[in-house]
Amino acid sequence: MIKDVSTALVAWGNAWLTGNVGLDEAVDAVEKTAGPQILGGEPAEVTLRRGLGDLRIGGLTAFRLALPEPGDPLGLTGPPDFNRAAIDAEAAVVAVLGDRAIGLVPAEDRRGSSYVGVRWTTLDASANLPDVPSLAEADHRLTLAMRDATEALLTVDDFAGVPPEISDALVDLRDPGRGDHLLAPGYPQRAHRVAALAGRLSLVVDLARRMDERGLSADQMHRRGDALRLLDRAVRRALVAACNSAFDPVP
View (cartoon, helix red, strand yellow):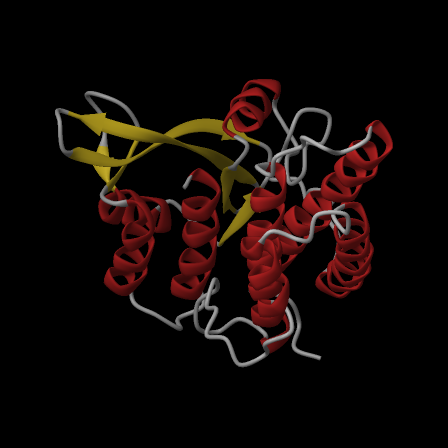
């Protein structure tokens, strides 16, 4: 949920900033992902709609996605407090306001027995450009990782057959007609395609990591683990590149 809502905030936030959707439409789309959302903490917390409006008044020009993991600070440029919080959450959003930035770190927000939403903690962040791949580079790496991971999974599990959940997910990868819409209006067509493929591959990674390892040799477990790590790395880079491409020059 945390990664999905971060992706949604960047995608729909940038669509709003580029004039492709209104603020209400953007907030509705983000909250459809993970429920009602607030920015900040008590007593200064505000609704997501109010918070985005305040950021725009303060000079907001873009949103950037970060999907870091320990040892891989993807999308982060500091300072340390923000980096640590983002790595712990495995997702964050950087709101760029000219030569400064604000980091938004999501967490599940539960109140009472039925309320479930998201709280975005705000921290100082660096406005420096992160070291992330271009959309073209991420697209190429994702294609290679998908091929290698698919071969590894099929080879490793050939002795017992691939579980139906993974078989279905692998079949979906070859269906260009699926209506995957991780991004918002206004993004390049290539970004939509890359984000959709990355979303499907993320499901493959999640399913494969939950597979029963009984019956696998040490070598098979090692090969599958390596393939999934490489695929997950490529997926995260593809999502970041796609979400951050809203302001790329049109080729």
